[in-house]
Length: 380
Image 1: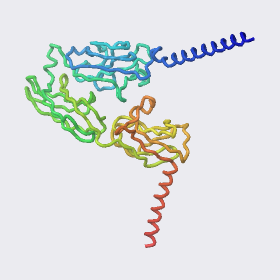
Image 2 (image 1 turned 90 degrees about the horizontal axis):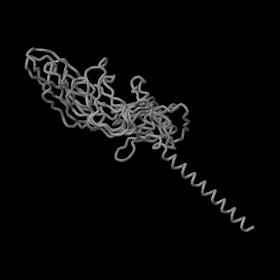
Image 3 (image 1 turned 90 degrees about the vertical axis):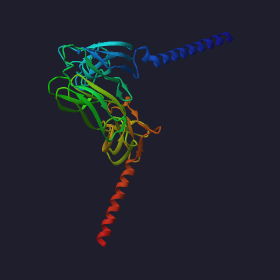
Image 4 (image 1 turned 120 degrees about the horizontal axis):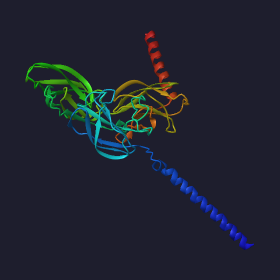
């Protein structure tokens, strides 16, 4: 009898040990599932795109690293890409030549931006514009697409470059705030033997902010000054440049946000809250409940100061009058909440708390004060 008991005990202990091994193994597999199946929770990328000379039909990207594969897309500030690389596997690639479709798009000259896009779904085809941004999203870093800009000039010998006005110098401040007007001055020369008129454009990180027609006599050099309002431009290092048809000059400028990030609730309702905010990056205002869950967001906001921003509760959100809500500034896209990050100032989140009941009481108190003031005036 004693022998059977001991044997049974051993069997039970063995079964328990096997069960523990299975659970631990399952836990390891689950924990490593993203890595095992090639899925990146937070895909990362980097790119180096240097100034260069080319023939207008192709450009060379010096280096790109992609954690989950994808594409490099070349743009000139317009809505449509000028060229897209072949599908790239995950890892680091050097000296990638990207050719434009000869039947579509402009020549690959001027200031160009190379942006790294994911291949999602993983089908080897680039469809970001075709899917209205639903597929093949750009890789992001701090909420912004991973990209680099370069000035590409032509090496053609047909005189096309010599017929273009040239930019011989660029003067711009090295730093500025995001609510001021800066002066950017360029020296533009007509190298031809004929008086002619050409367009000169100012670009900020590849986007044309101002363009004007300039008429110069043969061999004439003239200073052209652009007055640029930096309001709404994200803080940080930005590339600024002045461009002619086939030439240009660039500088960098460090933009500092002009005020402390802040958020203030100015009104509440059964549908949400209204806030005034100063946000230093493209993002949104989110509403969190007492459990820290996002239960509502504003529309996307450009960097800057905004008054009377509506932050609506989600359709299925349930909010009690005495529940403490937290309005938080987020950097990112309100339609992609999981990828958004809370904005911090002096190592603390930029946020404020409110309850619907307290807000309603404040409104009633303000109304009472106004009525009392009116009664006093009538009595007088």
